[in-house]
Image 1 (spheres, rainbow, N blue to C red):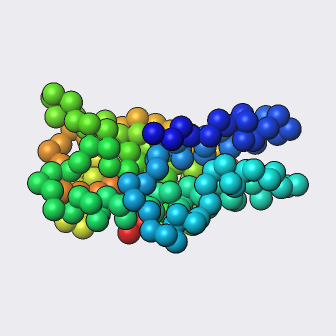
Image 2: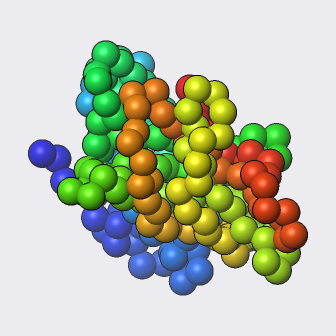
Image 3: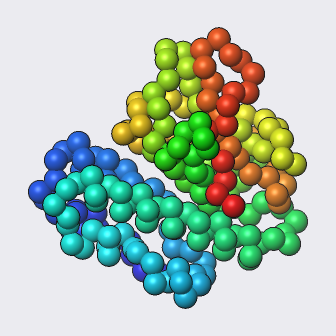
Length: 205
């Protein structure tokens, strides 16, 4: 098994502390996603985290943009690999990673949702890593919804965002019997609105 590149060795010491924290969060999102089961020749020739940061550009913003592009590539490869390798199963496979992208309500937002193995009681723990979501007004929050048959089925947890330039990493739970084609979206819940809000993140498929 190939070990992921060491963050400190790749980025180097000459990074602003705030930018270093942001880059480390994105690096952890890539590590959570892990390598795809099988890449096409075109994807195999694409960027890796080490390639992206090997030559440090003069402007840190350019480095963040390259990291975001690498994250999107890894997530898309995981979704494609899962669909091609597990389409005929009788249940949802543990270890499934879903790449989520922003809708028109949250352009530029990205997320990676990893479904962990089910426990003895029937809970499916999930780890969500997200970036690019706006900070909502007081008492506003985001909800991760299970989608089934193209419709919102049930909530799996909530979280808040500190702003578009901040990242979030949260544990969630799906205490339901999952089916092969189940997936997830993220909705925006504004203060005083208790029904499902606007979808801001959806699967990139």
